Image 1 (tube, rainbow, N blue to C red):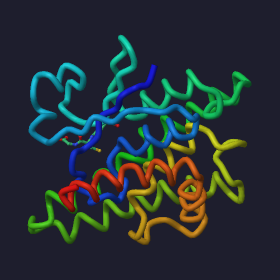
Image 2 (image 1 turned 30 degrees about the horizontal axis):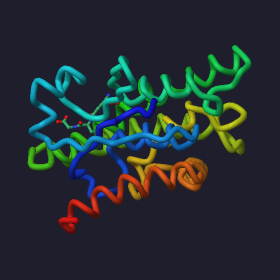
Image 3 (image 1 turned 180 degrees about the horizontal axis):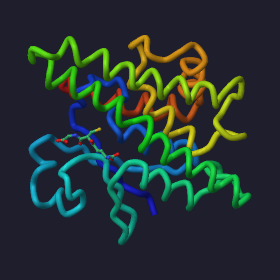
Image 4 (image 1 turned 60 degrees about the vertical axis):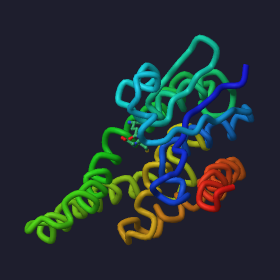
Length: 215
Ligand SMILES: N[C@@H](CCC(=O)N[C@@H](CS)C(=O)NCC(=O)O)C(=O)O
């Protein structure tokens, strides 16, 4: 059964692949699972029909037969459990890969999202210029610790896993910010160089390009 995911009809990031359907597309590409995409507008996302799938009126969602899921990392986890390639077979290695998914979402992503929110919502506040460096220091501290742990390895724990997929997805928001050290920038670049990432990226970009050109 081919799953259907939802994505922005017109992504506010202008096709940079920062919207969270990107993680789901990437996971599906890694495991070789074809998928359909249903595009939704901002207003459709807030309608009862979409809220039945996603209580918070957001994307992405994932439907496969009777199963409907929301939360991008939960969807990635589901895909990784159902297909070979994104989680190791060894039980302890699998638990560690899952731990990295949680670390990405729970430890690394929060300060990064604080920065995004500050830049979009707080730019006109009198205290913005004082606050931004504090948020950026929190990010630098966290990603510095992550970089130390990664060391000179290619991936966080042995072979590429769903943990790396979610972590790279989270860190990509810092591309061009100067907040990633060269070691982590190279880690992100390794993720982005994977053929599955490129297919996912191109697919979401094609949606934005078509919407922009009226195609
Ligand atoms: N924790 C959720 C966050 C979902 C989320 O924030 N989706 C954004 C796109 S990346 C969205 O739909 N924003 C539109 C809105 O909130 O109205 C996940 O990982 O799926």
